Each structure stands twice: as structure tokens, then as C-alpha cells.
Image (cartoon, rainbow, N blue to C red; front, top):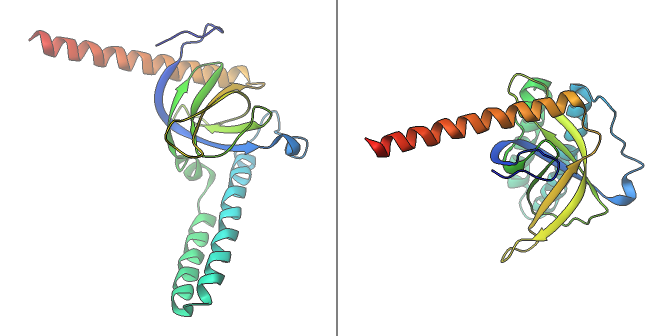
Amino acid sequence: MKSDQRLFFRIDVMMPCSFRIVPEEELDKIPLPEAPDSKYIEEYFMQNLAQLDEQINEVVAQINLKSSLLASALSAMNSKINFMMQTIDANQLTRAIPQRLVNLSGGGVSFNINETITLNDKIDLLIKPLENEPPILVRCDVVKVTPIEDEDDAYRVALEYQNLSEEDRRKLLFFIQAKEIEFAQHERRELSKKGE
């Protein structure tokens, strides 16, 4: 584990992590509130699902030109998924945040993405370090973008949090410290097994 220049320890860990790229030209149109509540977070990230739903409907319309039976089946499945999504409450939704391998610190985070991004863009990051606490939604500056060799449109992005509240920073640091203790205990157990 390395310490970065901000005196925060960095740790590689799997955690619930979702993101949205905010292009430079849209930053003024999409401000983040200082203290986003769970309803705001749900609606903000549900926009991605709405866009995906539009794409699905367009594809189903194209499939309908060749096979109306297949298009009907896909439309029914999509309607069922939409109904299920409407019945999910905010707590269940945050449990559905995908797990992602990240390099995490109290000052920033880095991970791989499969989308084109520039240093002038921002990333809105939704992470849930602590199971029984609300998720953290924070806008991040893109500090570094590194193409991943042998993968098209794959990049390693390094991000720095903008205006992370002290409460959210404490959550992150608590999570990192708990993981460090967990890793140290695991290493001790492995060493003791080898010593037997």
C-alpha cells in the first residue's frame, strides 16, 4: 500500500462504484447539490437507465421489421424489467451499484473505463464504502487518462474528489483502515499457516 502526496493511503479494493462522465460543455447544466439525498441520487443515476431504455426501444423497433414475434417478446421482457425497477426503493437501488476494482484513497480514486474521456471532463462518482451508510456522490476532476494496451477504448482514469464533505471523507478513511486491518489479518493467517 502506497501513500500519496496528500498523506492518504491508497488501497486496491472491490467496492460498489458507479460513474457518469460529465462532458466539459455540460458542466453548467448538471450541477451537483452540496448534500444530495437518496431521492436525488436515485433519479440522477436512473437517467442512465432511461437512456438505455430508449436504446432498447429503438432496437426492438428495428427487430420488429424482421420478426414481430421476437419484437413482442423483447418488448414484454423490457416492460417487466421497467415494472420491477419502479418497485425498487432507494436502499435496494444502492445495493445494485456494480462492484468495481478501484485504487482508493481519501483524496481520489482510479479505475478502468471503456469510454472516451478528456482531462477537461468531470466524473460524477457514486460509491458505497460502508454497508449501513448512505452512498457518496461526488464530482471528480480527471487528473490522468492512460490508454490500456491491447484494448480499444479502454482507459485507466485517475480522479481527484471535488468538495468531498468531511463526513464522506471520514467514511472513506474508515473503510480504507478497516480493509487495511482485514488485509493484515489475512497476511498473518497465511504466514502462520506456512510456519506450521
